[in-house]
Image 1 (cartoon, one colour):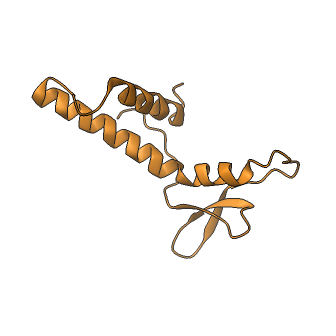
Image 2 (image 1 turned 30 degrees about the vertical axis):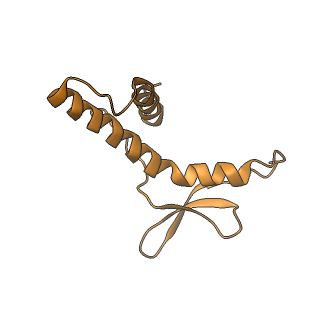
Length: 100
């Protein structure tokens, strides 16, 4: 895909106290997201898990779109994956890359 925006590579992990999401390298941890001090929604734990999964979710979407493109090129039909699935993946990729 062209125009790809760079992001901190995986793995991203939720910290022990679920207060932060970190990028873990060989010997260091870099904060990706931090629980807001005034967070009273009760959504942070779920949000932290979703943030931590973002790199893998983006990679999965890109693989789905790539595989469907290959199927279309060689078979002229994609009965194994619905257009709705591909459209959601394309939109998610665009959002992650700042094109939406």
